Length: 252
Image 1 (spheres, helix red, strand yellow):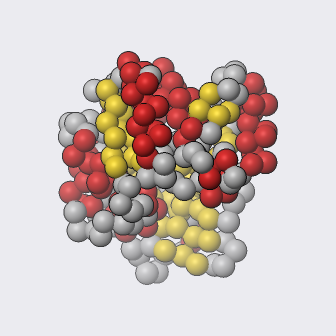
Image 2 (cartoon, rainbow, N blue to C red; image 1 turned 90 degrees about the vertical axis):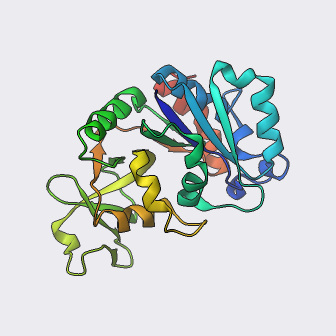
């Protein structure tokens, strides 16, 4: 069974004043709430079960899903109303809601892209079934300050901030200049085998730091999409550009 998780718990502070009265997930782009667009893309890719985590105006998201009969899918809600758990903590709390026999595609609610989600999931599923890979991270060669670091086999070995020179890696002598640098796209597929590793982590932690530490003992690979078109609806100015972006992708 193909399954996924939508990160929809964020406060959406950069979208104020819209998010003073609604969660970011219900902010409309092209006449449709962001969460509806992501659910539609996941459904088109073949996803049957989705977990949505909620926090900011959680009740509004729950009510919206109920009014739309979960869009004909199996949708569970992971409630973080008592406190945001960040990306890693969100997955850890939601873990019992997933089928332990299938990998989970993770997708931020505020991302629009041209990614072939079915292909990405199939790639991760094939690698997981071989027993070799525990996570596949969608990455691209775009300019940013922060990059994941990969070896020649595209296995994750660390992270760097090129502006500050900071490097994080399980290997103290890692030479970042000899690694391949790619930007994370916020879409990834994780094997349920990783959930047991999260048991030793606190309730609240980021998935980036988790991956950086886990790559010491688990195989985490990057999948490069050279023609990636992606927009993070994080600010009001990007919201204004989103309709044109959707038309470019043919998703309007």
